[in-house]
Image (cartoon, rainbow, N blue to C red; front, side, top):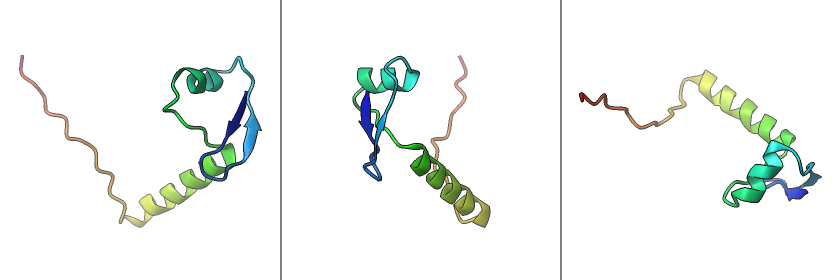
Length: 66
């Protein structure tokens, strides 16, 4: 299966039997990112978290009493 990275537009080949290829085939909303872009984003995010100015807004889970 040929896939294109959404950031750098590099074209890669995935084996048809892999889990990632199956997810991309069955759920078109999912996008592919190459390993270089994934590593780059991970490093940049970790650097931002280390500065202390990074806020991750997640919904607050309210405990329901039932």
